[in-house]
Amino acid sequence: MSQRKSRLQQELSIIPLGWTVAAAVGLVGVEILFTFFIPRWAHGELPPKPWLDLLGMLGALLLAATILLTGYVYGDAKRRAMNAVLWTLLVLLIPKPIGFIAYFLLRKPMLVACPSCGSPVGSDFAYCPKCGHALAPSCSNCGRAIQRDFVCCPYCGKAVVSG
Image (cartoon, rainbow, N blue to C red; front, side, top):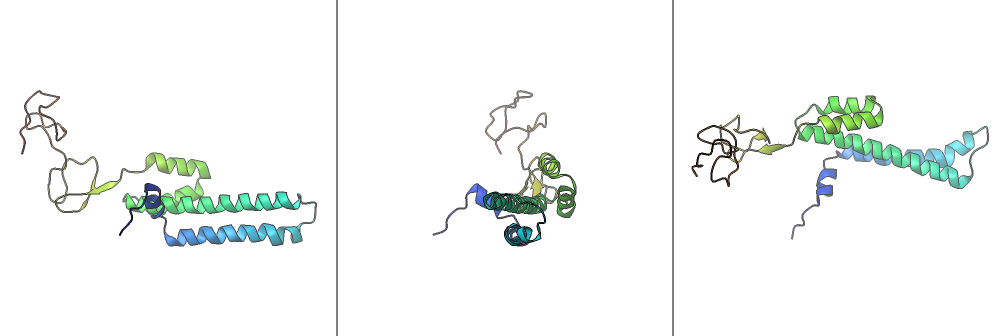
């Protein structure tokens, strides 16, 4: 019996394994830094131990979340047929919130498979560029896109021929 993945699980599964491992290493590394090395290297006064632990945990979580989100951008850009390396570099080099916001505002729409030949096509395409299959019906009179369940064209009023 196969179980369906939730939408969140589907989205998280596009993060490459290397990015997930890097996030885990970063999380553990920051925790080790705050637990063992910073107290030994400090020449001045440190915050009390509970506060230092809290700072370490927050820093570790922030680093891990940033690495995972960057990995998500890489995987999502690949799946949308965008330049994944370029977008990953932009997200890393532009100050964090601005880079991520820019990516999510400027990313291309998802590609869908052509029902005839299976090649990836844009969701706004009317015809498949590989096989010429009509992806969205159009009015035979005015040529504008219409929905499959229309009885008449909302633009010119002609009856839609079912075919």
